[in-house]
Image (tube, rainbow, N blue to C red; front, side, top):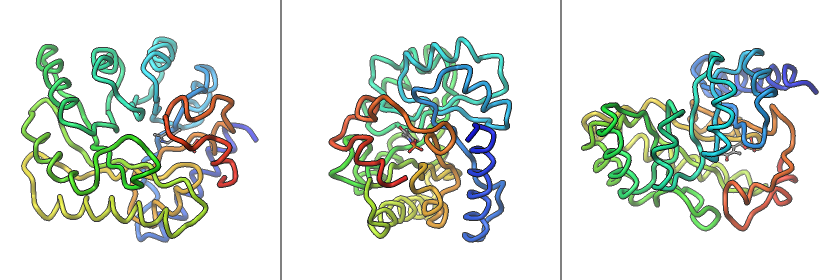
Length: 249
Ligand SMILES: *Cc1c(COP(=O)(O)O)cnc(C)c1O
């Protein structure tokens, strides 16, 4: 299957799930998860209508950004962000999905102030607890949003999560429901400067479920570009590997 055909199929599936969820297809934003995908294949995907690139590793992203910065695309950082990489992430990212702790918030703010600019961010929540190391615990998420909202350099546009890697659809749905509940609670509280515009959840194996549960931003790699050779554990340290996930797709 070509990238073009894959993109068309993914977009059809998104549209179908959106309608099922009472939304319009265009309400759902597709982020192409491009880790391990080389610049030329990403260029092809952009030319076939992919508009947002989601990268996980700073060095890899910078290299691709250099090659593709003249293409009409938006760049999102979706991987774990170490504080010593802040300067580099700000060189290419239009949005950071993985803000998950106050020390990171403080350091991001510090650097953004130095550069005299702001950054669009999502707060990453660890809705699957044991399976993934990153993301703020659900119980602490609202508090982190409130604290982060005090920093004028950071524009909070929503929440992000990675669903549990399992074949058990009920457990996957439970993760997405947790994120939607936090999202709704934040809207209800009406925290100043916070816009709950995006709910970034859903990947190749679970985006239709995520959309049914309220996602309006999905991050899809394998279903567009095919299987990766590099183990996900490299991008995303956790006990689970591509082998565990292969059965899901
Ligand atoms: C790799 C990755 C995705 C996409 O995963 P696929 O299963 O290939 O669609 C989404 N989000 C994050 C954070 C990722 O690292």
